[in-house]
Amino acid sequence: MTGPEHYRESERLLKVATKSPSGQQRIDCLAAAQVHATLATKQDPIREQLATLLERWEEVADSYKPMEGSKHADLEERYRNYRYVQLRTIRNLRQVLDTGTIPCELATEEEQRRGACGQVHTPEPDAAEPNRAVSGGWIGYAAEKNAARDPWAPSNPEGGTTVRRAQALKADQSAWLMLGRAIRRERETQQLSRRSLSERAEVSEKAIQTAEEGRVPASRWPQSLNRITTALGMGSGAAEDIVLSSLPENPPF
Image (cartoon, rainbow, N blue to C red; front, side):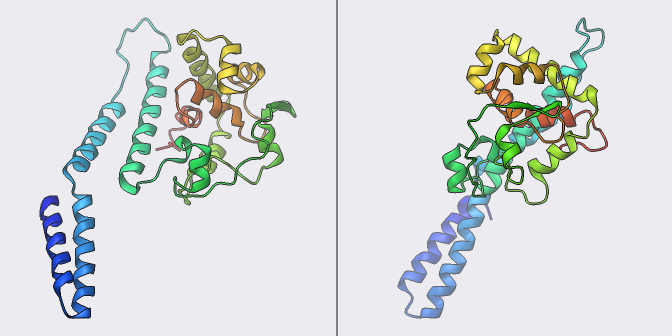
């Protein structure tokens, strides 16, 4: 049956349930109507078109390759970064389409508290504290004081942000240098000074400098990275994507 046919059958069963003198028949008809309504939603033509569009988009993004003989030495790296960011966007859209929940990284603090992303988050009391250097590396001040909690943790219990960050922290220096170049390139493309970006991302200029220099974090994931990539329009998870793109044996997607 098509989506419209399921809708019509659901409406017919509801009318039968309304007129039926039998309590058990009303219950059965209501249950059947609910099933048909659910199937109608899943087979909605617009939803099917969006799902098809996402599939085509993924095919295109996954096939991006730099042209041979390009004058840009880092073009291959740019394409790889772009590919992973695009695939992450597609994954987020699929979550909205399939579950009706907002990806945690895109939800506002209020939406996270309400559980609109599928998981109720506990707000970080020190989230506004500035980042600072720790033991030769750099981490978010709030993350240092509340290491057991991750306000960006997704609703996926099998892995998600925490696991991906742990994997990214194992990457070598070259992966972090690649991330630093991507952040600097995007900042310069938007003609932003480090000061302007620090105000937009609400992080220190030192945090931006550290990110652009590609320093490997000492032990924990720096929350400032996500604020920087979000402020640049790269997405809050772009840092993980770009670092993990250098680990073919452990891809993020």
